[in-house]
Length: 141
Image (cartoon, rainbow, N blue to C red; front, side):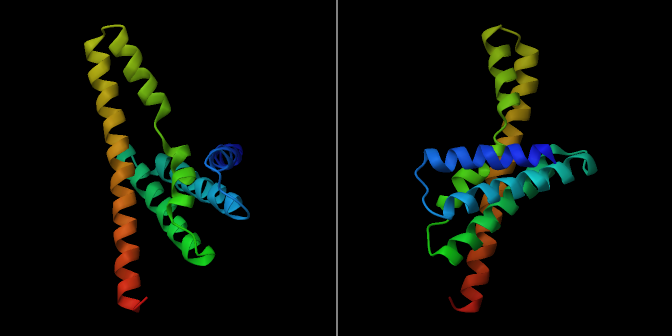
């Protein structure tokens, strides 16, 4: 539960950094917290990190799209700050440390993990955005 609070604060900080205004700041931070909640529930249940990050990115994107329609604001307002808690900082750090230390085996292992997380996040964003566009098109909006 404490991780959810820190995810909220991290997203809140980035939303302030990117000049999100009004109650959109809170909604952007809520989007990040929802994504981390999904990741923290999915991660122990699935042995595949890709699926956990994919589901979390989908939730962040769906919430960003919903908040965007509700507030009549661009979805990226909520998406950029909301995706921040999912960025694979630890994996990227170990990848770069292995690269600088010329540890080829560790570099390849951590690099593959970092790349798979990045691909999962990108795929989750694309899938959820496409789903929302299809639903909006079918509803005639």
